[in-house]
Image (cartoon, rainbow over all chains, first blue to last red; front, side):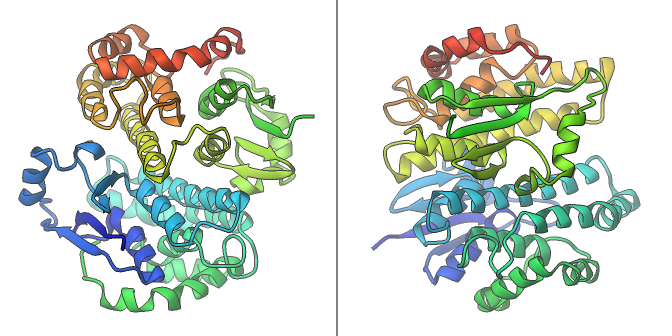
Length: 213
Length: 213
């Protein structure tokens, strides 16, 4: 029987979509979390293990998936690996490519958000985030909506990694829930995907550790 | 008529590793390039086609690959799709994950470079680029080496997308070729991979259009 261990910090961050995949697939795994203090980012156990070479295949960083004793690095690589194993990557090569592209679209939107915040702190940062959500995000969500299929799933006719990505962006990423919910309500394709994913993730969302982000 | 059509601008940019894949595998394709003016980047033909919804699958952007009538977006998705089709994605699921992770490592390094030079121009930007290459890049290349195989190929015993991606980073990405070549010369594992990857790319590198980016 295959064994899975996911090592990450005790945060959602870059580990959360892998945890979504385990949750919707009903696959058991060891959810190994390194302590990290927020806002200082103090993480001595991680520093110790990284210095010892534990994460060299991931350039010294987390997350790492250990699958049957073999270490695999990079959050997106891990997600694609698990999605393929658990039937969340489409029914053929074209569906797989379309799902893959949706994950990259969401990545691009997150990167645009990151670009808008870079070098800013305090009030300037708060303002930049709000400006992105009200001025830029609506246009990106329109474009995302137009790249997706219309039957409740992002691609094809069953739940995939693409649906998990869309859900994560819209429901588990931005601070301004009320504003985002209003944007979703105006976009039926996105709303349908959120409605598809919610029941599949319900139990995980209710029972997962509560962390700052 | 080719079953593969790649649409991008008349530049290397985000499409070049895709073109490497076609070159290394010997697969023919239509290398469609939209013109643009320099330095103002006016691109009326692209703007017209984008406004007409040609690139909806890619949130109205390039590159787009058309394969047997299906439009696929996102540079990295296209790279993974073609690598799988051309047997450049490893011999098994673990090698595939290792290749995938190396492409993500390279993406991270390129993102760090972009962050270093973002929101700067002129002399300030040139200084930031030079500082990255002399101070940051060596450390990243040292960490990167741990993921790279020592048999002459990045992963396993044959050429893959990982070799082509490493070649792009180390020979075809930074402006200061001499400085980066010196860093590679000091790192045997990377140097060997670069030398092997150059072989199947030689003809393309010699005959490809010469463009501003």
